[in-house]
Image 1: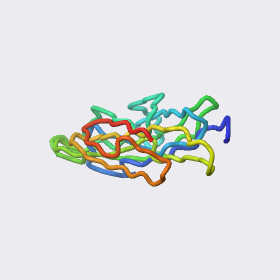
Image 2 (image 1 turned 180 degrees about the vertical axis):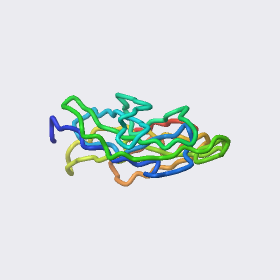
Image 3 (image 1 turned 60 degrees about the horizontal axis):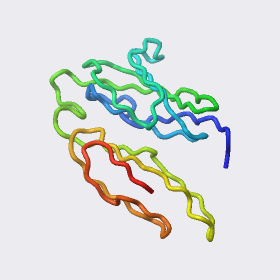
Image 4 (image 1 turned 90 degrees about the vertical axis):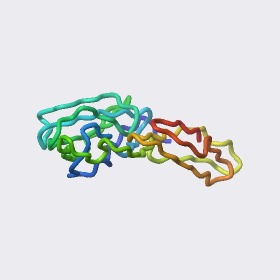
Length: 178
């Protein structure tokens, strides 16, 4: 195993770069960074392409997504994320933009019920050698960034692996032991 590894530069995921008609309470998501755990994230939202005019900052985020609330209507906004661990920090991610919806419009994630499913981490790796001990258990968080109930199902793909629970229904967050 690699030790003392700086976190990798995060890759932004949602909303898509240049997306329009985004709710004023969006979930911003990115792909998890590699590096020596624990990896946490800092998020910035700005009013300009260089994010020199910072509107919002969040630090020490332990998941690969963050709900931001009460943004302004009809605003072009820019955002970026960097990863931090005990050995340092990554570069900032590329800067992406989105435009919030018009006041009164439903928009993406507006007043109608919707489900937005995110997981953290976005991927899991287990390393084991045949005949050795079972790898350490991990936790997967299934997060609904929307307002509607959603139903999910996971699948075990190895005899030695157990997933609990395999199915669920949630409006918010469910932890799954793997």
